[in-house]
View (cartoon, rainbow, N blue to C red):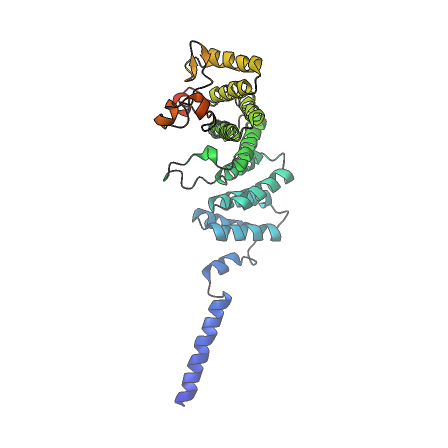
Length: 301
């Protein structure tokens, strides 16, 4: 009799464990099983998920709501809330995909500006700024691919919806992005100098001058052009770049009473001994490089 009792107890425990493993006792799973709800009841339950910041359950329920009521009263609003929940859960890839889908399906929706804005924020966050507050990291030396995408997306928001409530924040972010992208171009130009790729360096400097005119990096862009053209023997182009630099940035470090000091290596590196060596020696060892952020980044935007 005792053995039968033990066997029954063991079977009961095993059955309960199996139910738990299958998800019957899983609170999150039960919250996602909303097939018995009306559309309104289902939507209200999702609002509770969002209010409690239960992002993953909210995402599952929003996707389920759309599958059950694809043309329902809350379909479009639920798509917007899915974008929000995915962004808050830091799933930026899914956020971008959902935002692009909403923009494609509802280009005239009164809240399409929100979808564009969150898409831009997600692209910006994909550039990987998690540790910026902990370490002195130079974002301009990172891969700026997603930064360029964010710049294009936020620029689209401002161009199409200048009066959007999200436009002021987008404009501030664009200023930071513009300066970051311009500085990245200067970093690449400095690298090209180190490789002897003078035409490529000049092109990078010109790109900054033509496309990021309000950026503090324009001064270095002009200096890059002057230096590269001088080293290529194109003195007319070099002189033109120097004249524009002197007119707009008269206190640029390599400008003096004689014009532009093409032989200076004061900006790079900081090793005083190398700077004491004759230019004929250091020209082959220390390539030109330009970085005047400490001087110009504080200028009014």
